[in-house]
Image (cartoon, rainbow, N blue to C red; front, side, top):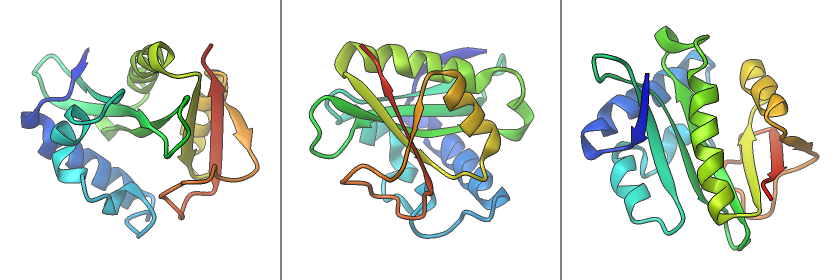
Length: 159
């Protein structure tokens, strides 16, 4: 398993993983990443982001099996958002999400004081991982949230 920055050639594969994952939870609805306008061009989107990046996990055959992003959150200067953490079903349960999170949080710590994320309570495995990594659950979304279908919000102090 190798983790590297996303490249344009990875766009279709990670879009497919994200959409299939959301569909598997009946989350192919407005207010989720499913309808994000940049979903089909994540490499280009993250390349133009200041203090933002997206990484993909690739297997030994160089196939994309997951990804995660860090980007600035709204107008809050010292806070980033953990974005689009998804792992293909065939790679789940192998620590891929944890490795992706480690890379993303290491990057985030270099540029931000806090890391925020939005998810759904029904994504129990993801919520458990966030807790293990030191994220604290919030009562409501931070101002400036784009994904109004979410019902679980977390924040982590990075430094």
